[in-house]
Length: 289
Image (cartoon, rainbow, N blue to C red; front, side):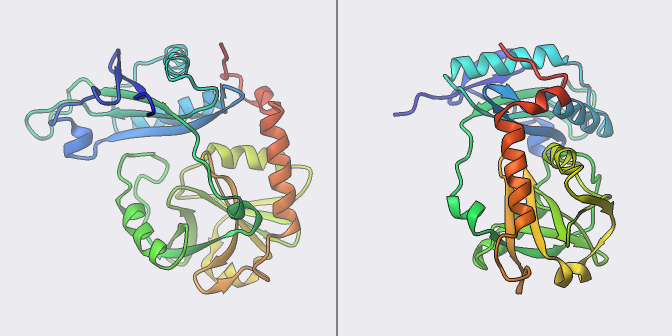
């Protein structure tokens, strides 16, 4: 039987079965909180400083007190990985509004939660054959803030699952935005295209744009949903997924429904970039023990 995982909550390291927050925590009662999610490569948090800064920005957007330092967060992460006997980990950092007995008491002490779990393992065919996604209209709200509110994605994913799809592509006013838990990319010929507004600016997205430079022309711009029929290749990216080729959007096959050569090249570049730790030069906040 798997030993219980150790988590960090407001200064304490506790078993997952002992971990608790107040029933009056604003993250629970009002969904008032932010988070960030990232992973390690060879035991080192990927683009740690970028994730830390994004979490800090999200907290500022919700006026949440954010007092932890990068050094403290790093120490918590590596201690958890050691206690959980993990060489690699999926890391989630959650900051909520804290306990508020009377509705909107926003002066409460925030709740800080950190967990490290095993990396998700996905079927090989997701990467070799591509996946199907569906599109849904969804107006952006606090688009650049990673809040705890994932209700639109959770509800839409139930429909996606019923249709044999693995992700949801959000659109608004005929513009492609992002997926429920991923960023969106497309190729037209040898030009890499990705939406540039009303999205979470993913850290994996940033890394992909970095490694693609010099290999492809790049356009960060508004992307119309009407362009789907003109894409030669499509893929999505996220910390846990890395890169998933997309073979179908709704009822439309992308090109011939096969994983294209440019997507394969990006996947190979990304694999080299991450596994050989070439990214350490671009992430000065990455610290190992």
